[in-house]
Amino acid sequence: MRSTAFTDQTCYRLQSIRDRLPELYHYSYSSYSQASFLYFGPYTILSQERPKQGDLLGPLLFCDTIQPVLTLLDSEPMLGYLDDVTIGVVHKILFQTSST
Image (tube, rainbow, N blue to C red; front, top):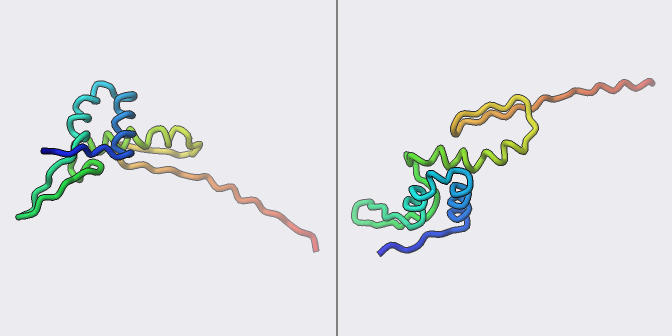
């Protein structure tokens, strides 16, 4: 029997996918709405949080999560591809002279 693993993050992630990527919602729901069993030798671990290393949807879910944040930033330059993001900041140096 599998237990429900709905945390706030999982609910937010699934709602975001439903709203922004509806064609992937059913697949994502079946993948993340319940806990997974991880087997390590004689031990069984109940996995209830976020995608794991190597998860095929991991980079897509990351992009779906970070995209709204990136659109709010006013930064030049801003480059990104999947889970690699570079945000630059142009510094303006102001010189103030004082007379002595």
